[in-house]
Amino acid sequence: MGPSTPRTRRAAVPGQRTADTAFQPLADESLASWINAMARHSGVETRALLREFQLSRDGALTMAQTRLSEQSVRRLSRKTGISEAVLHGMTLARYAGNALPHLPVSPWVDGAAVRQWSSSAWLMDHEARWCARCLREDDMRWPLRWMLPWNFACLRHRVYMATECVRCLSPVRFGRHLSLDRSCDARVEDARRRYGHDGPCAYPITMHRPLPVSDEAVLGLQTRISTWLDGSATVDDRQLVSLTAVMIMLVTPVMLRRSGEDPALLCNLRSRRYVGRMAERRLWADPLRVAAAASVAQRVLSSRPSAAEVARHVADLRSLDYRDAPWRLDVMEWAYGAALRPNPYVEELVRQGVITIGSYKQA
Image 1 (cartoon, rainbow, N blue to C red):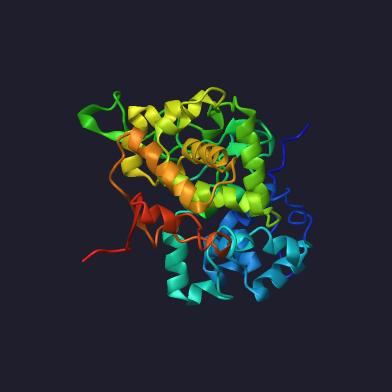
Image 2: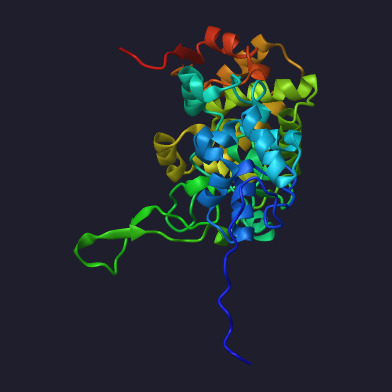
């Protein structure tokens, strides 16, 4: 046998649909994940594929992941063979007006809309969350809902979502072009290096050992919240999400001291490492805290109380944990979609002194 011939990379022809780019996205896959997977499948760099799709005109993949313009979605549909409806459903605009604030047709022209989205507590566009088993089984492709803090558990593998490196305990951020095929890049001290230099952690996120969900009720809560995200929730589901949104800020360990609940939720709230993490990261970034808030919200609503009764009950529970100081609610950070606005519980909690309304910046 003669020497092997080096494999040449076929150049993509703009405007022509090729076999390399004609493959279907996974169910509920994000646009960024699909394009990155398409680039790996075609053997080209992601930025080269973006140039072919002319997505750079819209401000790169991060902006396209938020919303595709009508011109861009028609062009992308023509080049890939994927319907325009499916492509629109792969962007965050799918949740606008429900779990996220409304978006104008051209969001990047409206600076106020961009600031509202970037400061919103309900969008994780920098810090990643993932299920390591899903990434391994799906060739590093990931669903759109992973960008929302409402996704706290993987129903497929019955584990809590991961948000930090198990080696250095630092949050893991999305890579270039919102990729997740990466290792932790947090800077850590390296004892092998002299003179105190540090280096990247470099621990693969697919090696993360997930925390199993031991309480079936937690998976039921994730199912109900996922139904709300898809826009087909019942009145009870919307009430659950509204109270959960508030309880993410207000939940305390005493609210979880009941038999039958997942002990991981209580251990997470009571751990000292968790207290330190609260000061550095947003509360919504912790899947265990979101799950704990949903669990408390479901139990409080089980007797179908009024909003005033809910507020009094929450105030009593917080006083048992010596949480007398009101929680300052940052209006800009807490911006969310129309499905949660107005929240029926915020006004009563303010009246009870549990919450105080703040502003984005104080003079």
